[in-house]
Length: 472
Image 1 (cartoon, rainbow, N blue to C red):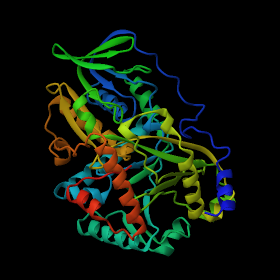
Image 2 (cartoon, one colour):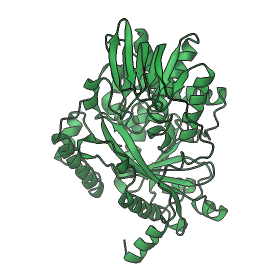
Image 3 (cartoon, one colour):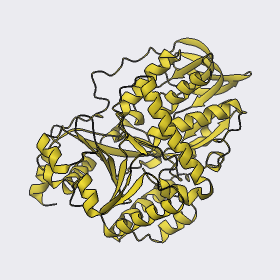
């Protein structure tokens, strides 16, 4: 990028607030008080993101008489649940291609369960009156390189062959640019029904209010410090007290699991996003976007982007930063060099929006696992269940994960618990320094593949052979 252009790009960021646009809301609810002293319950849920909130809500819906407590180390929705792009997808497998590669024999069932799960989320939003800008407008996977056009055509044809293509349509260059106009778009596949757009923080806050309305006792600024057996149940120590529970559901995701043997299965990946100021009517007309779909490009280092209820554009992705040792630190929540890179990419995609400014820039950690989709399990003789590893597609699939945990805690055999996806786990990541070295080599190889028309080198082919990977 030329120096003058670089200065112009940098100027677009000069007023950007270093906070998630979604969380920067005067209507943000006040936190619930912290737990002090001892508390007793039938079910303790640890974690106030989507996984924990859905688990508490569904537990009360299944059995209104069940005594449920939820603890959260800070405030509900403050981490990944309040910092993501607001894409709520039906896919439980991190997309069709990953599902075909890993669970081909049960993919039709997984797709059906995913569709039912998204329908249930939409129904819950309506039933509890959650004002979260829910729009089931779908998502377009766009091609920005010729080889990506062919890859999308092949994947769409494979979906149709498997009977999974209903609701999706291939768009040539003219058709995709008629939906959203960018000179970089060469084609795309529009999944018309399988993805909804929403305000992610408002969804979390709405789920919190729904839980409170059903009698869930929520304690915020209450971290679970230690998990131990206690008679027929479990005990969880907190900074100012303790919770004694018959059963425990862990929804801590990227934060260190209280079941320590689970920790090697996930790594934190820091992802970053920008939000523009609201588009003027003229700017909106210049890009089209009348059908308000979410979009994502098809590169290995990909961007995701969408339009909000107040006609801003969220633009995120591309860089996926793994800190050595898997360190979680608020210092990584902001990365100006990534913001500058993202802003430059934005104006390449939408040159007609030159002069627009970004109002917010933020980052946060995603819980990534080597198979890109959630895994599940039990501990402490079935008294504890966990779900983690959503790898950036958890806005929708966390509700499914909540159902799986409740099935496991009840000791029930269900259509969910019988799935190979639920019964198996991904490959754990190796210890350092091998983990950092392997991730760095994978990121370099993925970038090289993007530069070489998708050609995957020997390292990536080896990972493919063993079903391993790294994504955000």
